[in-house]
Amino acid sequence: MLPSGGEVPPFPWREAMAIGFGVLKLSSREFWALTPRELAAAIVGLTGRTSAPMDRAAFEDLARRYPDLESSP
Image (cartoon, rainbow, N blue to C red; front, side, top):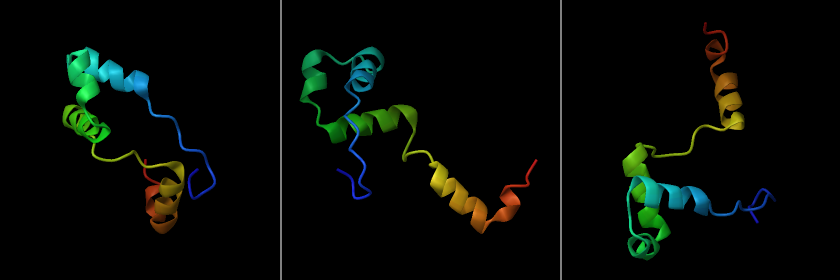
């Protein structure tokens, strides 16, 4: 369980295998030999993503602190 009381989401195996096998072209042996951290690093290298996208609460906090962002065209 998360500190906020929410449940930990299950690991996205389907997506991980799709990237590992379909995009990175790993063999089963190579894929299953990876640690989750190694797989995450490979995905970041592939996508360039380094952090999770901003969630709604973070956006609303940012908009409160910088109200001019809300009125941008």
